Length: 558
Image 1 (spheres, rainbow, N blue to C red):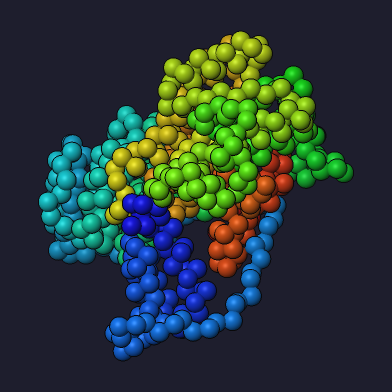
Image 2: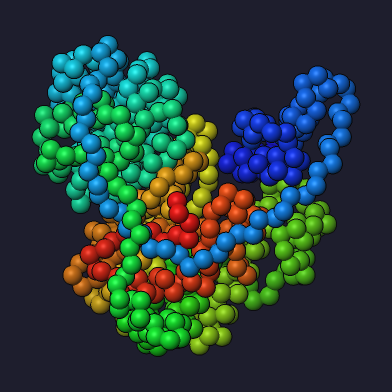
């Protein structure tokens, strides 16, 4: 079983199916069957479907499948690797809604307390047939439209607790799904990212998060929801108030003339580091910073400033020397072979051990590389969800150096899976690791007598635009924006950077693999240059406006 034995989830199976279609030269029009390939759970199931696609229905009934036709290898498309473009969200006004709610349409109102009857009355006046479902209960019937009201006045994010409710609602295949929340400096809900992902996974559904003013009363909220139910535009996030409806678009923006010339002729980031307050005495904490793109940023600031670097991650502190069983295995394939030779037979266990070895190597290489660049480095093995351990580590760092100048938070886990197939605990794990961990770190550094001047939270373009199979990850990264905004003051800046995909480098943790690079290239998706990405962040810290708390950096026109 590809998923149970090898952890090849539905998203990865779709990538494999697409690669097979290209390599085997499936006939024109067979792309409509890719979903069938990606749904197959075993290698034998995939093979059977391929035989059908290659040989045709009549021939595939034969006992012995015909060999696949010889296909000339297609020209490999090289990935385009560029310096990232900077974008910010900008509001724009939507057209006035001139239509009306469909007469006789059924609408489920989920929760809402005293607001629910007000919305129901408005719906009846518009000709709809509302049904109230008490808070905490799953709907027992389906409807044309569903409106979730319980996110309006919650003290904390409705996610991940509301995820089973959304799963149940989406399984009923409504034509419209709405939720409503207030635009306040309250909970980091992540609903924008979630609804953006729902819209991508369910193209036949119109899914909209309606954001109302902080002081909107029940009648105003009800009016906004009924209006949105009659709207024909397919915006996943709509901001209402002052008689207008507005949506969000990513707009390319620059950092101004100073940023364009600030690096000087070398363009190596030295001027930016100085402007951001990073010198040899500065101290920067990077959470999740011993691997992936965060380690790449650590190397950059070490090379231009020699600042003191504290790394925090969940990978255990690696031993000084590696086990002889694996020491000579240089890549994933060689490590698999080494573990198989040692007598290991479970594919899932082999993959776990391989990943653990590669993670330990990356941590070891990062620490050694930073020291070679001239920085003082310490690595702390800490679970970011252990708030006491996080607080104690932050306190120790400040006691050691007497200061903490900046924080970069990039911890998180990815467990991609379509909403319909997503276990609730998996959603909770992805969302809580990112959001709960960021909250723990920001709370800890916020108690220091001389706290950092900046905290950068690494998000993802999935949070800004949504992504199929990443509803939890998109919601978590979107929620970071509010955490960073709330942490900010006149003396410190909280910034969420939503990164697009980075090209592979000498270490691939947190970046796309060479195989996925080829997939992106075939789809025309450009990748961030690993050399330019860190320099872009340094420029942002040096020249970015303090009141800007979220940006997107990507090489592709998403």
